[in-house]
Length: 400
Ligand code: FEO
Image 1 (cartoon, rainbow, N blue to C red):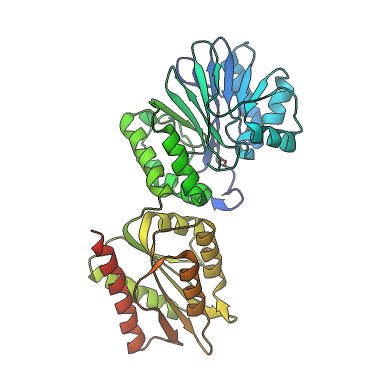
Image 2 (image 1 turned 90 degrees about the horizontal axis):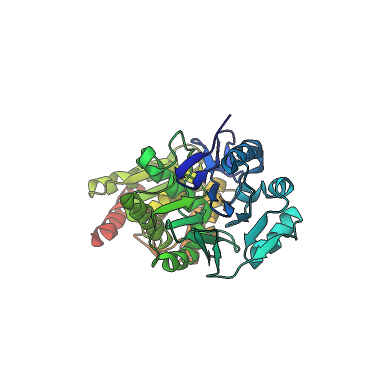
């Protein structure tokens, strides 16, 4: 029997861990699993904040009923309708037919569309308040963090922000729920991967949401994924991570993402990397796009300012896995990157042309001269790769 976990007096964690799924959204690897967080406030009125993926509804309802301990459930606040959080809403309504579903106008449309529920839905406006007794809720609409209906709920008495996906991470909660009960460093790379993979396109809405929250005093961040953040230095850190990522600000470093069928294009990548290291760049990450999940490549592209892409020509186009990666970068409206590129061909070149088009479309700052290699590396190609590595290093060092 799994019990709800008290976070503080009147606030209970009733979420679940998913160590079964291989892919989040059927796209992104989950080597460390993921949690679907749900919280209950018990006051004169009771309020639940989001539900969980329907696959885990049994465990969730079990925890919820123990936490309620015979009290009725008055409200369920839906901060986000994506089914990893709203998946159990239909079942919740069946079990608690008198529960009021709280959301904004867009939430209400989705509650009807996904669950066919139209009664007992209370539509709130931006800034509207709801009293639970000694706890006072304020609703902040934060569209596109990460769907159009997303909102956050602030509890004024204990200064809790129920933030939906914002400040979320991949990784299960293995015993500890709050940052004080676990080792937070374990989650930061997974937070960046979560942000870049899931929310990455929506930098500007995230900035607007952060601006909206900026005047609030926050003692607890209760996100829908990952730890509850309670320690002042950790709260500052997770907010700054989201702020930096949503501004598309990278650290000094270079991701070299390359495709290579027989190792010739890989030699170009290695040569560029060698020169970067010679020039004093320490964060150099080579990703073979055919082997490394794009989830991690995207994470690193969000982390570092420099991006160099290399590809063979394949069927008179880009190597397919490189093309697929580029579509993911473009799909996230990635900004503020220094970009270099190289390509290869055996009898007719197309890769470099396509990479030039990518540079134009993304408006990345092109660094150095693109390198195009016929068949295998000769001295001229080697020297051109060295020059490309040096140009990228020089550009990065200008920002020191
Ligand atoms: Fe965790 Fe956008 O759902």
